[in-house]
Image (tube, rainbow, N blue to C red):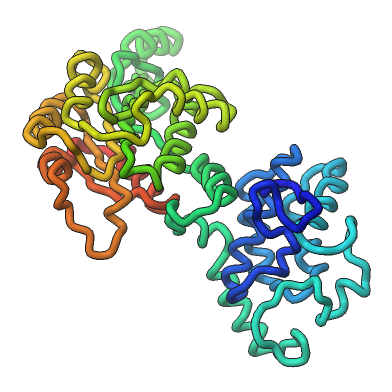
Length: 401
């Protein structure tokens, strides 16, 4: 959320006349406040880790939103880790929650009828709750923490600020391929693995020729390469920004990842996504794809990948993830043939289709139907939570998912 422009709106036209302007149940407000605060603080240069946003959401779930001072101190205790960030926090809080900068005064914090508080529904006597009502409200609020709401929210309905916060949540996902054995060996402290004759004999010599404890070696393992093939056609527009953020998180965080755009042609994106600045990386990636939001020829693009990269070695023994809705204007028979080629060399092929989360979805698109026989796992990809399932699948041991 951008800084206030003094007109009650941010640069994008969003309402900033105080979070007290939110409508709907307290459940929705508790899911919105932590995200808005975290995004605004980061834009002012304050480091706010994801777990701090989670803690803020839990704190609001416990104390509620009835008083401005409750929100202020909950946020300051969880979001601020440095003394020098307190003035910035006060300014951000004031811009989002109407009132002068700085901690709320006793009058502001103590008046349950204060107009700067967030409306939380019908409450007797302006917000004073009995023990039973408070307990019930706490239970509902805790169940609707900010992270829980955002992680299950469909990317297609997220605001730009929520997408930015979702990217921070994505960083907590362990996108690492299943481990494979290398040709290297290292000393093992456990009594299993290959016998280390050199160390065993050396130890025996030192003990007068008696073997007291045989030594062993264990194989060194490393994650399998992860290859991401991202559909940039027009039918994927509503999910393209969120999924491109996922690609950036994965590529920038590891060395054994390759990323490609699938459209009317194949475009390699790995180099463009290596920048640790998300905006720079995504701008470079989108500018590198000449057919962004155009048509889709999945079969031809996949053929190019197989011929130039995949079958030659990049996909061999790798975990390949295709992010696409399966709509294809090309030949479905070609797509099926190229998926078969890819499946023969890959360790695992995973297809992520955001449309799969739609009620009543059936994989009736010609491209999707042609590809499915060669897919090990068919997943949704419409939210952070569904990408968490992807994280588990790509790291799972075993050839078939």
